[in-house]
Image (cartoon, rainbow, N blue to C red; front, side, top):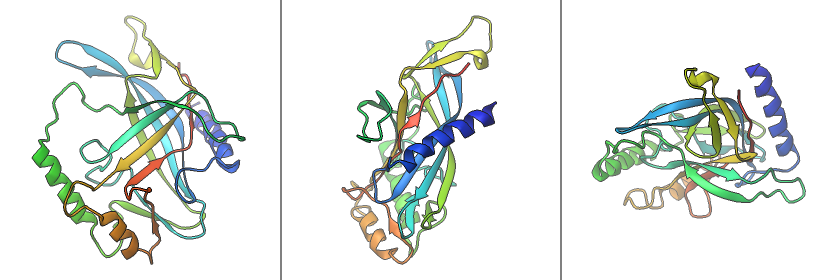
Length: 243
């Protein structure tokens, strides 16, 4: 059943791409489909909250005529989008965009949750230290496979993403029943995943992405936004109801 749903939503999502639903940067497409929805508890000191964890199959696809270099949203270590360096956000959409206008109104942008009931174990000094460590790890003659993927023209890169949300869904949990049996109803027909990382604010990070883009030109085009940061927004992801 799960495999059938996966293939159905994947086909629908790629249909949007084929009809011109292009991502925000130079021939790079980021698409996704929901594999599973689960209710997960968040334990706080005074109470327990129920959140929705969304499992997604994501794919970068290169629709340009030259190699593109993207930062891996799920690298081997030191997750740059986990909240201590950059961010992963969910943009809730009022509706699916039509082929004619290719736009949909974004009504809310929320950060994904991770242990929000507890203070961060990272002080500002440690965050700065993490950023310095990350900068040292990528300031190399070529893009390291630990953090970057070079996608050839017509090629793709896939990964699994999990986002945990406290809004955008309604839950129906029956007393005495497993959370796996809860019914999860989506309040919005679509959403987008947004990855963002900036090295600004660190002396060694100022302008580094632009420097790497020039240095790595023989490997491909390092994808950056107009501000010189790494920002990727997916195409609309079709929402669904579980249970």
